[in-house]
Image (cartoon, rainbow, N blue to C red):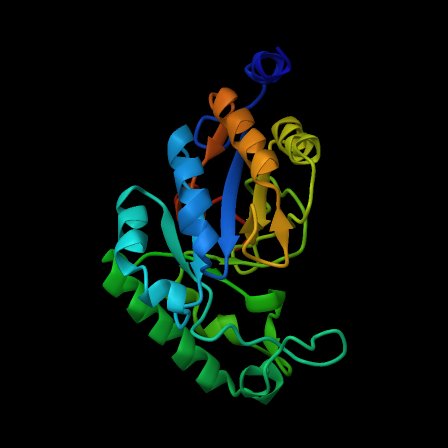
Length: 258
């Protein structure tokens, strides 16, 4: 009953997001087996489409090419999470490998690796249009905002800072998101309700779903979120990041709709 009440309340509200009250993007990082084993089947069961940000050097990409290709054919986006997932090392970043410490990168190296990842992704899905996600949310190499050299290669870039901008306030160079780790279904659904009320863009960031990663979300909780989104789909536009970014560009309303 609560699910239907949300839908009934929202119908009288403005519908700025492709004739819906809000937009929700489901993103999954790092190219892990769980994406194909748990997430794609869960999304497909509800007729929902997500964005998978792949580290293209991952063996999960090379070992399961046909499954990634099938996911793309079903409408899921294969996004670019770089070739090697370089992050800035330092305190609290013990997981960063020396060879892939962004502090030692040049801008040219970062750009070359990201473009190489795009080539791999195109070979998998045949597409030239997709979005990017900053590894670890790191936007700069020393004092250089490296994505400035990549704007024509992507529809948008997803960051990691949480907020729910309205359609006219989305920064396509750094799209905000909410990272999920051991959240209850109620907490995630509450975020969706906030997005409906504020007519905002809500981007979820998942790593493990039902295992597979140290940053994990429960399988049952994730499923409850998907069921809520499906039950209220007349008020919630659920789409891959690339579709939402292109919608913002087409309408010309985004804060950085270049």
